[in-house]
Length: 540
Image 1 (spheres, rainbow, N blue to C red):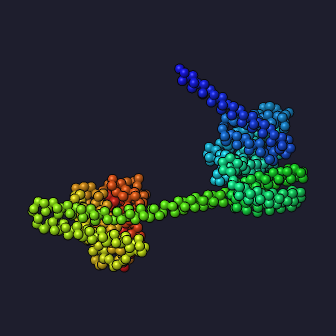
Image 2 (image 1 turned 180 degrees about the vertical axis):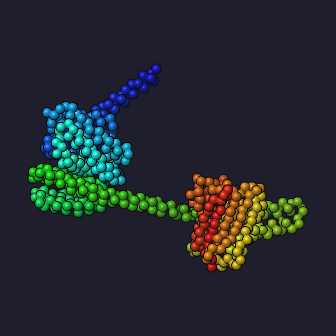
Image 3 (image 1 turned 90 degrees about the vertical axis):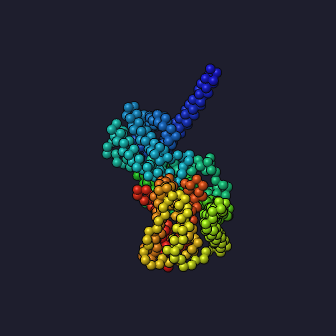
């Protein structure tokens, strides 16, 4: 009972805490919305709620992106603001319907940005600006169409002014959102998430100062005389350079400065609404261009930093990995001849212990001697490769090499009850310039893998040697279960294996040896079941 009461008290406190946060944000938004609307309502078109600069609607979209439960607060703020500042004499129903249309459009835009594209102002990423610049203009065009149509419907906008009002609303909203949302994300990241280092801050302040002076001169010159407003295009140069040098965050803050300077200059020189809209359109294009360059640079910088970190990590482990790889390769390469030596010696000892030696013990000892010789050759080849970075090559007859490999793997196939066949090859010699021991190991690994993959007692492995123009192809086919789908794409990756005690080095080493000889190693499934490996080498 005590636990239930404590849980109820804790839950009540948590709900009260969330309620305080909700109403605190709502009150702060309400006050900020009223203040922003009071600053911008002198640019209303035809006595309607439409302004050529709408930071208050940007604030609404950002709030709804935090939680859809703020949608009623957004509608109430818009409704009250229009009653207080713009058209208090209008019918309440007309005002309520118009603002409900605008609220629905802004909430839909916020939903698209947050739910569908994952945009979060508090964690703005460079690629989010791509979604912003793609979704916002299109979404705002639809909102402008619905909102201006509603104003015409309720009698707050003359149908003759619909086109101008539509363009003014779309330009004002698009310029505000494409400038303020990236700037808000950049400020939040620079102050809260990842403060800029002092050195970068000093460089940024210097660039900001130069940009501010240049932008002020350009803005004053272009807005004071509308006949030369094309001078405003000179701002593309510093904005693009900032994006290339510092990325989208610094570029977004520079665009915010330019926008504020432009608004102040337009009001100071009393430019007409038509000129205001023209400058806002140029500002919108400037923002898109600057942010596109900044995003490109930031993504490139991120990729470069990640590559640099990966290279550093690779450098740290490469020395240890080299020694480990050599040890693993040597262990795998000599494991087969050592296993053969052990089996032959065990068989010879058992024969001698029975006292019925009829020459089989001597044959087993000779085979063990041959396996020991192969192990020595493998070790010497690896030693030469590590010391000199190369292995000796000679003229090798692939026919003889295949015969040798089949003879060496005959005992392993017989122990599993697997039939080992070789298809007749074409007439003529199959000579290649190659490292004989390396090729023997590569092809031997393929044959042994096929023997182990084939079913015991009724398994079958077929080895073939064919000619293809100026190349020879060695095929190794089994009737086993085939390659598991989960490792099919990683079949030649090191340490990928399905064997309980396998190291996963046989196929990677075979592929590396074949590639060193200018050849290829591929695999494909065989119907109804089985796997076929094909090793192709250029003929001498």
